[in-house]
Amino acid sequence: MKSISDKAEVSVDFPDKTYMGSFGREASFDVKVEPDEVMLRLVRTGEERREITVHLHYYLLADMLKEIGQGLMAHDFLDESHREALGVGVAALAAALKPPATTRRSRKK
Image 1 (cartoon, rainbow, N blue to C red):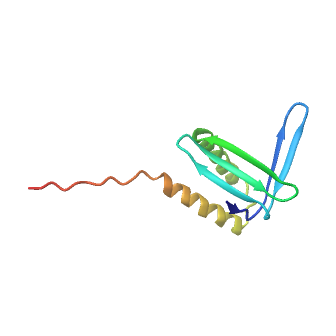
Image 2 (tube, one colour):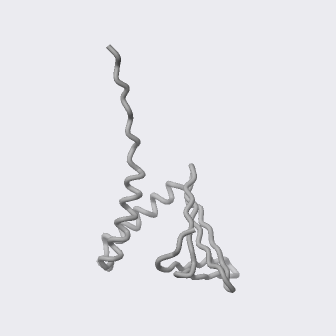
Image 3 (tube, rainbow, N blue to C red):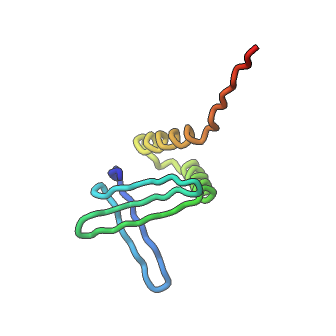
């Protein structure tokens, strides 16, 4: 588990109930990468313990990332610190998405 450096707020609405929770610096998160999906988990320990887990399949995650990018392009409200932090995360994701280098075997003559 890793410490949360900022804040997350979560709400789940059902027809007769709404569940809401916040996760701040006292909470932690975990990301698990699976062949078909990514699992995101937020955990808050202590008296007000709560945990949420979200499983996102890759096509949905891709759609969400695209929408985030388009939303950020349409607005100019990110400060340099947030822009830099997002850039580091995006660069790590972009590096992981590059196709693996193929190794060529040299032919013996």
